[in-house]
Amino acid sequence: MVALMPRVTEAHLAARRQQILEAAWRCFARNGFHGTSMQDIFEESGLSAGAIYRYFPGKIDLVQATAESVTGDIAEVFDLIDAIEPVPDPPATFRLVIERIVSAIADGEVDRSRIAVHVWSEALREPQVGVLAREVGRAVRDRWVPIAARWRAAGHMPADSDPAEVARLMYGLMVGFVLQRQLLGDITPAQYLDGFSSLFRGGEQS
Amino acid sequence: MVALMPRVTEAHLAARRQQILEAAWRCFARNGFHGTSMQDIFEESGLSAGAIYRYFPGKIDLVQATAESVTGDIAEVFDLIDAIEPVPDPPATFRLVIERIVSAIADGEVDRSRIAVHVWSEALREPQVGVLAREVGRAVRDRWVPIAARWRAAGHMPADSDPAEVARLMYGLMVGFVLQRQLLGDITPAQYLDGFSSLFRGGEQS
Image (cartoon, rainbow over all chains, first blue to last red; front, top):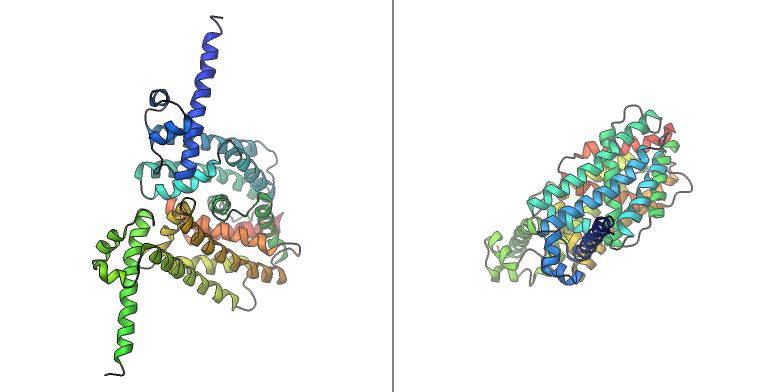
């Protein structure tokens, strides 16, 4: 019993932390970081201020933890792709990224991709959010650079293509999917992937 | 003199209306629609409440006029492309759209593409903004459908490609450019177009 106690406590701490985070995510998805107060999070979680402050001393700590969680989930998807040999062609790679990111970020307890749309706006108004949002955005975009280099080496891209520019395009496609999904609400991964495939294969025709 | 009077007055009215709109755009670009009050617009424009209410009875009228102005400028770009025979290939078309939209929407007196980022977030929280933002978003995306159909007819897209899905991708690329420009601030049309061209020509290699 004594030997088991710390493990049980650790699991309990982690579960409680996750419970608070998910309550915060529901608030952030509804109203953004700026529009959410600690009071909103107390109410959403049903926990006392004291219970929450033990894990997250301030709202910025919740914002930071949210950024880390999203970045971590996205990194897992890219780690998977980096490990596939040979590199899948662009449509197959994009399929992996879109499908897995939707299932990791959007299909969970809370659709965290909805938070992203609020964060983009807040990043332009609040310097502290701006620093975090740019960090996450650049980290995601940078993951496309080695993939584009591998596409080029495998003959899926012209020899004169610049992986850094291809990364800009792929990142643009990712956020363009998130925005359409949240704003227009009428897009499935399959539709977007069909469009991508048409564009990529289009080069064969002309 | 008498014959000229109405014309002079009309020009004056239009100039005054534009002056108010541009003051509102500076406020909207900084703080979004929600974060801007009519008081902010009085101060920004240096005009009295009475002078402004004559043109725009409420903030929603300014929001509506902003949406119409952006939609109008974007429509002009697409009208131009619709008139080109034969249809330019996808990289040439995308170049026209990105370069002209940047010069019409972003390089003017106020960068209205910055307003877009705030609007996306507000659209998820405020139903009235949501209706307007979805209208603009769908109108822009729909303009890509006939272009994609012409690409397919001209052999720039596979025969089995669906113009509606290609439109989703092209719209995603447009908003992905706007977001990167505002959030990461380190992207030029030329870089993005290089990435697009590499992806499109990539299909020739594999």
